[in-house]
Image (cartoon, rainbow, N blue to C red):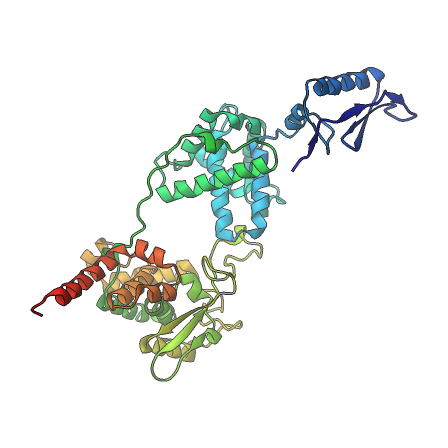
Length: 454
């Protein structure tokens, strides 16, 4: 943060034997400053400007030696430059998927913060250039294609100065841009909320850098579209009989399907996320010959794409979602999954690094690959009506099926939440409709207890 002082002292212009011989010297607080000029007239002119600011009572910045009006003007960079500085600041500590979200938010709001739209390319071209190049730090050292460079140069010229964001109407226009998709339709409420939060944080970064005196979003009255409750619809969650048919349909698909039977089994019997199953290692598994086993989940391998990771690999290696990096989630698994995993390890072994699941070439399981197998399994195991209803549309619905099965079996919500890897609050919000059925059963028990004739 800058330090300011009203104590300013000026010395007379002095001449030296130098390329710019006339030197202006002054002191702000206890720090001396000097600037050299080619002619005495230039030196006197700058001295007069500084003295005029001091007479007006302006504070001077100690580090730069400039009055507040000049220091602020000197720092008034354009929004495009600031947005890139914000991305650079956030980049090192952000996983690949978060980097994509940051770039998407900046690419959405930047076209709304320009002097005019004369010469602006079409929205899709703009989004590709901003998202893929301007706000992807991994590509900053790479020469962009000529058409992309043209778009980026246009934004460098047309981007508004940061001081312009004190205009409330301009900020409202930027917020309006955050609500729209490329096709002009309104984005999902959750998407709008995330982008607004990023925009707000970028303006806080500007306040910290003294580019803005305060965050203009705090002064703007604006209501985002209401977020829809993130409830899981029971109509899309397979019941135990349907899940069994689906897993059988996976196993019956050639070599690739058989290699993924236990993979999908981990989602259904252990409520594991796909990225957690991809990172599962044999050392994380206790698989007794009889009875229940245990999975210890503490690695995830989320896919964000090679353009967004530091390693250049499509998958990152991270800890559990929304948990400290070293936290381990222990999930007891039934004999059905124990048997699946034991059979899988006997048939296919492990990858070089100990991973349970691997491709034919020893690589990481890809979402495109298991997605194709799942689509085929649905076509084999479900009726046309079930397919049309969206039942088990995504592999992730197996995780929902696991949690709903636990809840309907009477397992305490706190224990279900711990095994599934999220908070009790999230469990109540996301699985509210399944919990309602539990309420009805509980009410029946209470009524029976209260009945004096029982």
